[in-house]
Amino acid sequence: MAVACGEKPVENAEVKLTTTMGDVTVRLSDLTPTHRDNFLQLTEEGYFDGLLFHRVIGDFMIQGGDPRTRNISGSEFDVYGEETGNPRYWEKIPAEIHFPQLYHRRGALAAAREGDAVNPDRKSSRTQFYIVWGRTFDAQQLSRMEQHLAMQGIALPDYVRETYMNEGGTPHLDGQYTVFGEVVEGLDIVEKIQGVVTDDMDRPLEDVRIIKAERVK
Image (cartoon, rainbow, N blue to C red):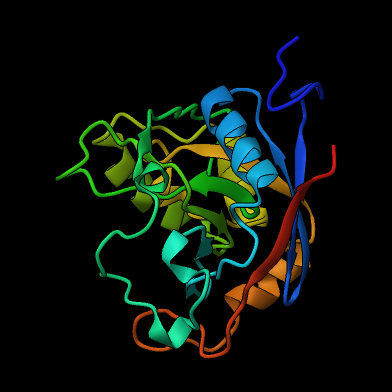
């Protein structure tokens, strides 16, 4: 049985993010062991403690994990600023894209990354992650989106289509970013966070911070 950072079994590991707006618990996928173990290691190091959700887009997602946000307010954060601090946190990890087993349904936990132009292998940020909120789609909207996805070899199975129609998500990201977990508690908190007021750089006007991340299972 695989273990990470101690003697606890890794399978079905869960991490609770205690934020200034409430608690969100995520379950990490065993289909993505590199991302899973990396997230657990960062959690056990206390890396996420004190970081902001620095990028929030309503009806889309909330993003955190940037090491530059630890000791500043969101209004001071330059989204396009230079990489600073421990270079280890700016390392990339190989993509683990498992579609359609893992897709961008509402509550999905995924890794941020640089764009294809500079990152054709779609390697993930080691530290930055996002949690999907998205929106629901009707059949006609999904069909139009599928035409675009088909150019990348992506087809939405019926159960995935039904989820996007009934629960919501961000299907245009499928097959392009690594999904490595999902929210199992606190989706209402994700809804609150994605609904905060932001500036024109998608930074919350009032800081939303991760107080503590801890493994709970």
